[in-house]
Length: 316
Image (tube, rainbow, N blue to C red; front, side, top):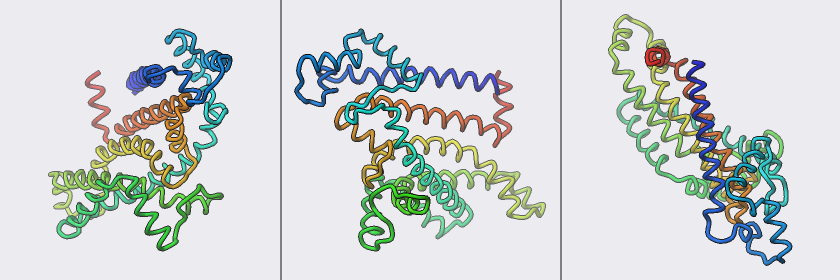
């Protein structure tokens, strides 16, 4: 396991270096003068342009600029936002709690809804299974912004059950404000996880050892818990790691639709005004969260299925 972790961490570091290089190079690949982008199209005197270039080290060679930026990132200095005139790290830290609340709430809905629907479809063949398949198919094909529009129209404008704008203050008020955004964010992934859960459970239910356990008179709940659900957790856990990445990407759409002051809305606004320091920092953090989630999944897999740890040991 230690050797495996070292190899994965080395891979993560290499991926972050490559990603940081690509993200930082985006400002140089864009047509035009980077200083003009940083000024947001506003006219400025030669002295102001020279100050901008000095502040962002635009007069240095590209590799020198990249090394200085990476050095700042390692110490927590992501630069200064052009739009807000604030340190990027502080700007992200102020908006990160809203995004974490939203992702956590949506993740809970995905786990509960996806696992429950998938298990229900696998254990109730026939009409129930077909209804779940139809519902999850529609959910999977529904983009987050379409779900947001529908939820706002029904539950906010017509029924008035939930607010459609703002973060909320306090635990209860925040949960109320984030219910519709979390539902819109989770809808597609609930359908995906439900289908994966159904397929994994059906595969395990058809295994010979499950039939043998049933023939020996073992209780049905015990068979499901020990022989079906546990063995089905492998593909479910793998998909959950992918879902985390999807949640982080989709937050920008949902936060914009519901007026949430989170990191996703910050990214959208920064792209619009070409606030490159913020775009670079948020993009790098999303990649870091994605690779960390996948590393966590790889660490959990041997705990779920000990055969994986034995296979890794044989391969080494």
